[in-house]
Image (cartoon, rainbow, N blue to C red; front, side, top):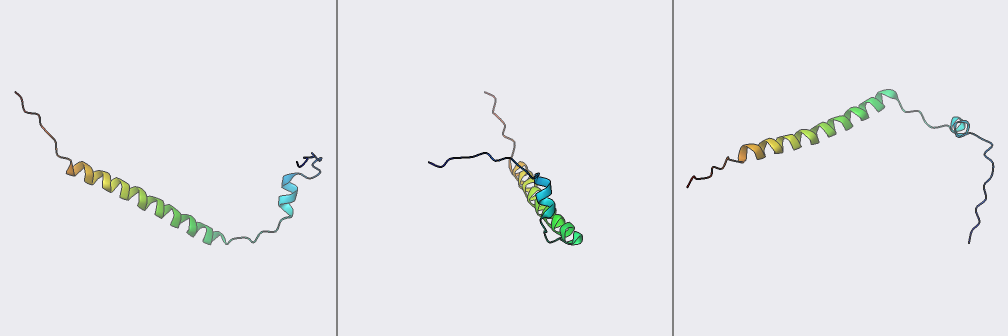
Length: 67
């Protein structure tokens, strides 16, 4: 069975992350991607709303006959 050993943490996470070089994404590309994702979400929500409206229109009121 493996043995776990706790070692002291000499570095803070932020120090390590600051030393990592990630390629920077162009801000306009990031904005465009966010807008596309937003449009996808809006389309899916609007299609759900449309189907709800269609269902409401199709559903005709039913009347119970009085005896």
